[in-house]
Length: 244
Length: 93
Image (cartoon, rainbow over all chains, first blue to last red; front, side, top):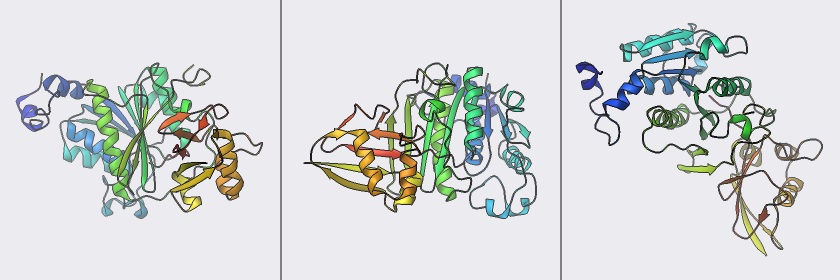
């Protein structure tokens, strides 16, 4: 049941056609893993907190640097030198004190992924390295968890929602490890936030079985032309090493 | 004569310096031949996103024709007005 306070807090979104108390309760009873909490994951976590997700698990190693500040909106200048994930949790707890936030000051690895992702109902993959994204993809498939893969580069972004066993996965579209991706990429914070919001909307639709999700499609966002397109993906690859 | 549009995305667009280009060919052609023609006129950096050192199409490059993913480059025929999008993998977070 929603409390009277929760009904008031979320009253404006409870007016959205198709999104009622049952869907709000689903969000309240859900746990989302967001990794990492930088330019993309930060606004993902913030919008999930605003929407009333019950629990957030955040994973991101390291301390905030000054050159993170153009996009990592859960942190501020006085956080430079401090643990990113601790700062993110403080901001989120101030923003919505009714949600639980569990933090891991580490990035996803083969060794820690079961511990970090094990209790999540949905994973928002926002890591800047394919090694982490593929680990999250495999964990989602192994655990039967929903996965929203959000990525950006310069003025572009993309969101792919993955339902294990039903949709193609990240390895289906990138069967070989991408070798040309560079760790440092051009980014305006507003673009990563834009991509993040689309990812959160897709995640809420998936979690709450609300409206029509974009399963089996790659949502492509072009902030230069302000176009959003969907690429129709092929079904799961029969030779996919992750799906099979 | 056919004319097609190539959409360059991600790091390929950065390397090319443009995000779109129109190309003309004498007649419809298989996608693999179009990619080979693109590669032949491109810089090494751009070509390297499309083909590996052995000349095989990279499986980490997502190719879409008219907004539909294609993996059968040999048997996909490119016709007049087709829009081919080259989407290298991105992972900015």
